[in-house]
Amino acid sequence: MNTPPSPPGAGRTDGSSVQIGALVPLTRPGWVEAGQHLLAGLELAVRDVNDAGGIVGRPLELVVRDTAADPRTAAAAVDELARLGVAALAGEYHSVVARAAAARADALGLPFLCSSAVLDALTEQPTEWVARLAPAQSHGWQIYADFLLSAGHSRIAVAAQPSVYWASGARILRDFVAPRGGTVIELDMRTLSPTAVCDELVDNRATALLLLVGHPEPAVSIVKSVRSDQRLHEIMIGAPAGQPEFAEWATLLGDDGAAIPFLRYLPERLSPLGARVETALRERLAEAPSFVAFEGYDTVAVLADVLRSHGADRARTAESWPRVAVEGTRGQIQFSRTPGISVWQWTWPPIQVVDRDPAQPDHFRILHAS
Image 1 (cartoon, rainbow, N blue to C red):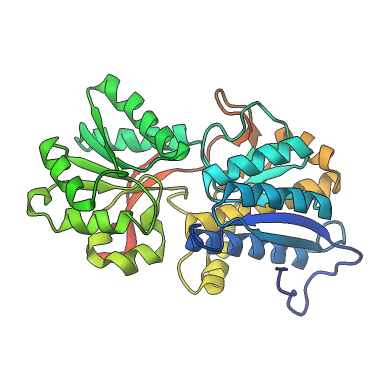
Image 2: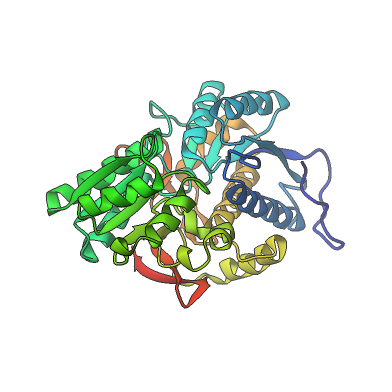
């Protein structure tokens, strides 16, 4: 899949293209809507780069591979893209998949700018080859935990499926709230039905339920079950991983999908660049762009800046992470080494806790911001 041709009047590019490999979940069981938004951001930025003259006169080109949320598929795609000669890798939404891609990129000496995955341990050992735009899970989920405690929730249930990502999230929440007098009650979704979840919430006197589960299922069924249980009409449902961000959530749940706080990585007000990109993304997607689309755009903006300065040499690209200073759609992007995180990290993108407004489910309310 290549970037659409530039419109008439685009900046001139000559010669062979500079290729970036793009890893995106575009089929189930991947989160397809997130993948589509990520790809839209990547593609729009490539178009803008080429309209401005490309990479020192050479067109920038995306070589897209569907990861389908499968780590082995992603690792194989990294091998293929490395053989094809891409200058760098971009993208991926799912943390466990990005971890597999990062391991292969590190082993092959292929620069990888991860767009959206948040798992702290993106690689087992520190690496010079991988950088990340999304905030680390420990940072974002601690902000979410602080929001919960500030809202008066000290008995917090988590409906969790087995996964490195969900287990990490539950541990972050527990480690944050326990010293502050809170309790995290884990509900194992391997053994509980949505109806049984309701009984557990009542028995444990939980005031908040967090969805650490896949989308659309079982997340949608759990929400419907809790919302229809008269015993739980005052419980807060939360989704720190961001399931309610996308339009499919509102389509599947309607009013039941409102007032479910989640993490979103956007500033309160977009810069002029961010506003321009938002307009273009809305046109491309035919709906409001999610923060994931902005992550995609910023990924290419950073890589294009590096490639213009240092050429398509992979080692020089990897060496340039600490010198990046790029104005992205959500602020100035720079990378640093952060304790406990093995890759070059943007410290930090803006973080909000938002929900869909019950009065207007297509609109978001900012509840808390870092």
